[in-house]
Image 1 (cartoon, rainbow, N blue to C red):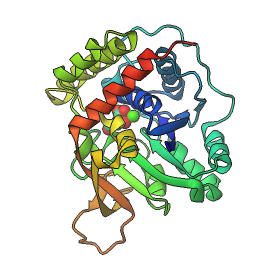
Image 2: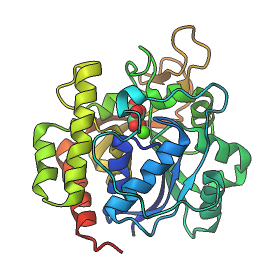
Image 3: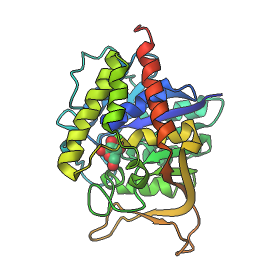
Image 4: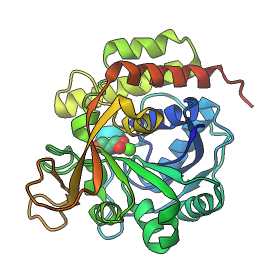
Length: 315
Ligand code: BDR
Ligand code: CA
């Protein structure tokens, strides 16, 4: 039986491919896409989710817009990484799929309480919507099978020397999620930096010879230019699909148990995830922490998902 999931995202190049993986892989049942401000403003990330669903033929999954800003601090977008649109590179047609009228948190709550089985949440942006869900609807926690998130790092950051973007963008929200008691799996930079979209990977999308394959190649080519310019990477890391892949096949993403806390006060380290991989602190395990990615099956599943979506008749 496919695992029921909700992807909560801020598209974003890698979020776009996470949506495609979630919609195109038969091991998961994508119940909803919810959006949050992060890589860009909420208006732009929501427009981008509609654009992605339109070009990927994802017409039967509700999209709901969520929080416009972090819980405490001001919004600071990543236009240096994803461009002014949040999804620079390809030319997108006018979207033909719309958002539902409900707030993302209300839609998540309704799905969680109405679905026959517990549902897995896959956040790939700042954790604002998820934190609001957990604080506003404590009854929802028992309906969440697990939260498998892209965020944090066992090592250094990519927004500050210490902090990764999704956690640094809303540290108070991340703190609520890691302290919630819900089963959390953290796919941080240490593992997503293994998902490098090399020229060979881009060529696999081009070789599909479909409009969607070409759009993926264009997204990755833009992302490659960003990562080369900002960080000197030889190929861009496709962070967000790693979290989806962990749900699709847990053997693709190897994890260990650890305690994770979010630094809220550090003078130079606010937003860092402090991951106790060696049980120094005696604090209890509250997360599974991803350490290694099996890149062969990861890219095979990613390309297969885009292949199956590209083959769908547009409705
Ligand atoms: C995360 O930050 C965003 O820019 C990406 O979409 C990803 O979710 C990586 O740090
Ligand atoms: Ca993201």
